[in-house]
Amino acid sequence: MLTLTNLTVTAGGKQILKKINHVFERGKVYAIMGPNGSGKSTLAYTLMGSPVYTIESGSITMKHNNKKVKLNSLTPHERAQQGLFLSFQNPLSLQGIRVGQLLQLACAGAISALELRKKIQALAQELHIRPDLLERSLNDGASGGERKKMEVLQAGVLNKPVQIYDEIDTGVDIDALKQIGVFLNRRRKDKVYIIITHYYRVLEHISPHEVIIMMDGNIVKTGGAQLAQHIENNGYVNV
Image 1 (tube, one colour):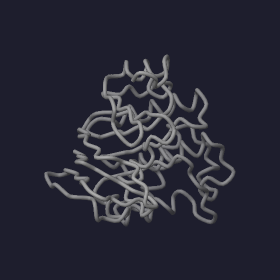
Image 2: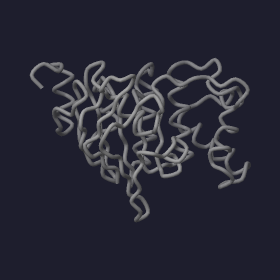
Image 3: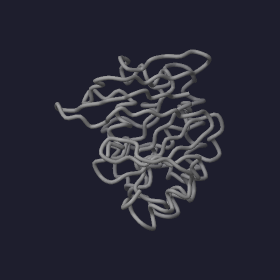
Image 4: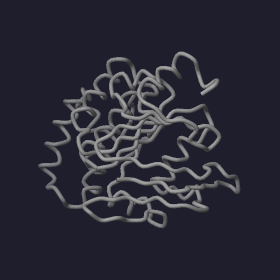
C-alpha cells in the first residue's frame, strides 16, 4: 500500500534519511524502533509532508482504491485526503477549538454534525475519555495520556487506511495503554499501522508483523516481534 524507494531526506542542509527502501502492506502492523536521533520521527513527518524536511531523492508512493499516487510533492492536507494520518508525539492544545469542531472540518461535510457527535461520543466512551474533555478546547487541561487518547480518537473518526503513531505510548499509564491497544486492534483489519516507539510495552498490546530498526538514518535490521523483545533486553548493541 505504501512504498518507499531510495528515500533520501535532508533538513537544514543535513542529510537525515539515507536511501530508505521499504514496503508497508495492507493489514499489517509495523513497529519502528531505534536510538534517539536515528531518523524515526523524521520518517513519520516526511511521510506526512512536513515542510521542515526536503526529499532530495527517491519517492513515496501509495496505492489505494486501485490507484497509485506519488506523494512527494503533495501537501499534508492532500496526503491526508489520499489516506494518511499522523498522531503527534507531543499533541498541542488548541484554544477555542473543540475536537468536534476540528473533526467536522476534517470530514468536510462527509457526515452530518449530529452523526459526527454521536460517533465521537461512542469512540470516546470506548477509549475511556472523560466527557468533559470533549467539550473543552482540544487538549486543554489534559494529561499526557489523555492527549494521546484524543489523537487515537481522531484516528478512529477519520479512519484513514495508513495510520502513523509517533510514540503513542509516551506519557501513557498502563491502563490507558491497554485501552488504546484494544481500540486499535479492533480496527486494524485492512489498515497499515506504523508505530514508532522506544519501548516494547506498547507492542505487548499491538503485536507487530514486522519490527524495523533504524540507526543513523538507515534501516539496519528487520524482523518479527521477537526482535523488539531482543532490543528491550539487550539494547541496540550488536543489532
